[in-house]
Image (tube, rainbow, N blue to C red):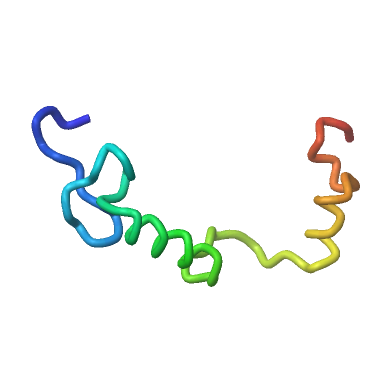
Length: 67
């Protein structure tokens, strides 16, 4: 979105690759995934109990369009 400027890999800063966009390589893509899986990245918000997570996946949370 910035004309001729090449976008950079969010992990290492090298120019991104079309094949692995927005990353530069499979390695950076995998490193990013491992950060999410290992709780290296977190989405801000209030803590959620394991029961609330279970309710969400069993459909008892009301998020499927029903109240």
